[in-house]
Length: 214
Image 1 (cartoon, rainbow, N blue to C red):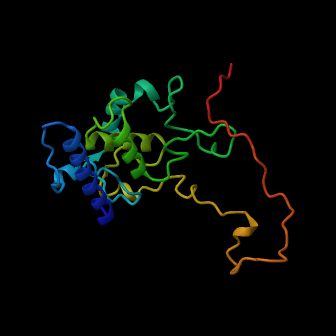
Image 2: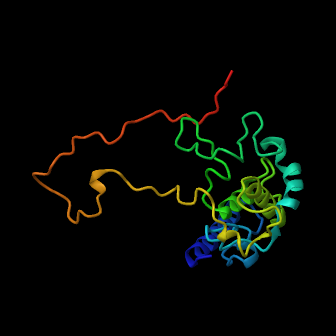
Image 3: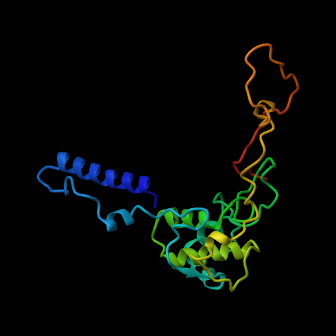
């Protein structure tokens, strides 16, 4: 955790203590005390793309299949195909530049650590942060396995989650085609400037809402 983030967390806890002490009647809320390490740890759950911040734990796809079936399949399907209008988690490769892009493990997510961060922070729906660290690693491993990114017996952990190469790792950074962003231009033109009159792009409809194929 950076010093800035730690300072902000400490300030937040102090502010909450102040607010509760001010408006909470006769109850005491440790007004003016420094946030404890245990209090900060409750907020410090982010995992960086390179894996820094990943909690200690392990999991593989073999064990993850059972956890996924119990915790995730009711909404996302037994094989990540999605049920009703719940998101698909597997497949969708090559669809991001189509009319109906499908954002899944293999087609969209740039980092496995980002998947861990989101799943642990927000899933299962309605029961956020009820998963253990090992269960989260197991679910991530199962999704990676179903997308042919790792083998079934690969032991995913806090030591290697930042090393997983995702299919769309480089898909989030594209060159900017606008002529006025040419990096070779050192000084901006201020007068008698040439005017670009060629069309380099057109607006198009981007409908990501699933449609009724019937």
